[in-house]
Amino acid sequence: MRLATVALVVRDYDEAIAYFVGTLGFVLVEDSDLGGGKRWVRVAAPGGGSALLLAKAVGDEQIAAIGKAGGGRVSYFLNTDDFWVSYAALKANGVDFVEAPRDEPYGWVVVFADLYGNQWDLVGLTADAKANGASS
Image (cartoon, rainbow, N blue to C red; front, side, top):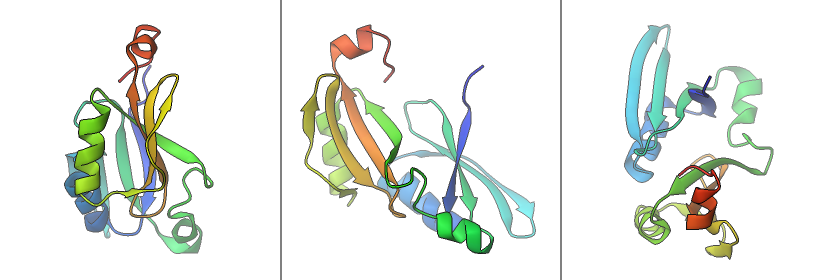
């Protein structure tokens, strides 16, 4: 088994596509009209891995959940083979970093918030972390 897709509740499909593809550099994997205003929209980081299903919020409960995927904690993790290049590109695209990059035993890491406020880690794994089974 493998985890294929994770849902992320969003305010608007096109707004979310613009952010994830235009700002973060993700790839639009699929955008299918399901009728009745619903779409099946998947985006993925260019290096592969699981996709995000951009799920448009419907109703008060789902709208209230926008930006709260991790309950205030980091809930998504992007690994990169070149931390400083990825960090500079995201910064140039206007990504909202909530802290300065820091050096951890497993590599460089920095937290950013997406357009809805969900917290993400950008992680550049050390060679040791990669050798011990962490994926990038």
